[in-house]
Length: 307
Length: 236
Image: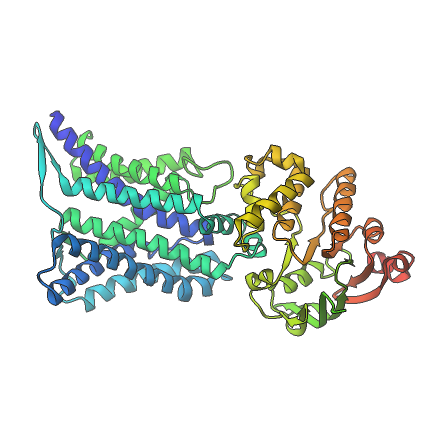
């Protein structure tokens, strides 16, 4: 096979991996802190993309002359803030009230919430059932390496996503609030006995996880230049699988899992004798095998590690 | 002198099961007050109520003259109460030092945290040697040190100690009681909740006996030692 084509696939794998890792981080944070799987998390990614698009349109309407870099920053931060706020509402009014109920109820409630979010965007966003073009906000500089095209926007998105994940990891491992998040993940009651404001930490965790998901949504829009109301469905399942194969509750596991999944897809496209349409079948198949080999995830310890 | 802690007619329940009924007690400041009771007497529930982890169904809790019943746990801790919980409950995936930091979670002054940590390390030199070790990988006795040190970190005015002897060897139990006695002598009010009657009464000044959710005996530690009700609470 052509080396430049391989490079192209590698770049694609990196981009997908970063996107999956961003989604998986949220799954793993929520599981760590509250022992719940929040199935609407994938749809938060989609809401992030649509919020970004809406803020872009708002920007264009209010001040069409705004410089592009400023629009990009505004769209990113506003989109992330919007979904962070939405995530806090979800945790306060859906997750927390179900805390004393069996975990299965939370699972079901968040699955239904995801459907509500998808359908709400489809119904209430103008012409929401059709794919929407997402603006190209990043410069279209590119460099040719042999036959492979290295695009500036890809690099920028990859670096931004990486910085975001590093930022979350630093926050959790090296700040007082991060220590409180870890304490709640390890023993919520003991953390409260130490004086940790538990409801606040839950809100904070949902704000962080949802903002990171929103960034994945923006990244998705900027990478494919098209978004649609059900993009969160597959991303959610992939993000969840990534978190599980990495070791649910472990941030580094979520990142590893995201990239493992992305490169399985790429491998399924490039190296398998069947059509690339089966890349997901191949990737999920390998995930099942991986789960059989590492029942608690690749990076988890004997008992499942939290955050 | 103002009481450190007063419980007035506290009742509590899990669902429909009454666990505490009409519990009243007072604690003198700067003393070790103990609560004795067998398994299932309601001791842990009482502590949950004190810390705000369980809302009492009725009654008042006064800490230094203010009613704290119904406050959130972090607000109650903020008033100057700390707890060394039953079963140690250290954070296993945190280092010893991080565990101690968690103890002083609400303390804003890094200067005071550092000073207090030095005190804890002076009390348990073993912890200083192992301060970078994950607490979950330590022995039971060392974890008990982490838990006690963590409880001392916020310099509480009232320290609740729940079953410090649980699951420890007799030697370690004696060590722990020696340390608790020293905490009390340093002027901290201590509420010691225990099953171990003899050693607990030896270091306490006043005691209460809880049986099936009610206070069945109270008195000076010396008098309680020979009290019939104490024996009944355990064996009757």
